[in-house]
Image (cartoon, rainbow, N blue to C red; front, side, top):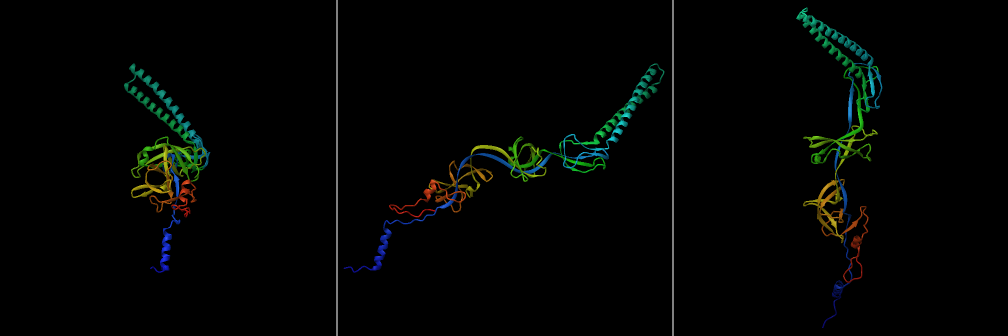
Length: 387
């Protein structure tokens, strides 16, 4: 006959019965928050980026070609001049007098030449009638030859004097701005002494170098977008005008120049410039943020999120990099949802909670499904929401 049950065993049996019952249990499962983005098709413009310097298309240091005193000065530093404008005069009156003297000497040489020609004719007639000797005839021929030489020399002196008159009037060889003035009115200048620095600013050129691997994609007439620090929000457009015929052996780069319209003169030679060349345009390219692509031992990967908010590790093949974006050649498709931020400790089939870029919760149907109460089998009581 059994005695009374031990109260200690009664308590244990009661707890076991409660554990085996169908009463609902709370399940606390945490979904890792991640920032996601849907993969879309875009029009991709491939570019070559380079740095360089702005250069004046034409730049010249004007020097004196004659010696003398500056009698007239027409311009000053910073002035704009047009091609052919008179800049200064170096004693042109003296040059005019020298030209007049040279012309007079030329007229004298011409008259002497004519006289020697007539003398030769007379000597020839006398020789033919055997009145003059051959020695006299030869002497007349020699005198005529000397007269011709003097005539040529006098003509050359006239040309030199005329050129000196032109050189005494210093004119602008091209349109531009006077960058510097080295002389003043009344100053005596020597031949070869520097007078002005003249630069042409419209158009202006940007010179830069591209890597050897990109050299085959650069061609004449290609559009170039140029940025300079004084105008950081503005883009200046130009065209490739010069491509070096050879690769620099030391730097393995190709030298390129592009011409930019600069009618307002805001761009100045010497400015540091950034040049972007659009070399190709592709329609319907897959592009993802650069931080979405991870480098692992097996290569580049991306985490995708399925309809049940679970992540999957996907190997991808990346293309070109463009300003924080990466082209995806294979591994993803249009409409795929990828993890952009929050990759830490992710693994295949892990449950995640989608977030907007600002960290707020994304209220989509898929996210609602991830956050929905997990009901135990056969129970009407809700469990704790997934986070």
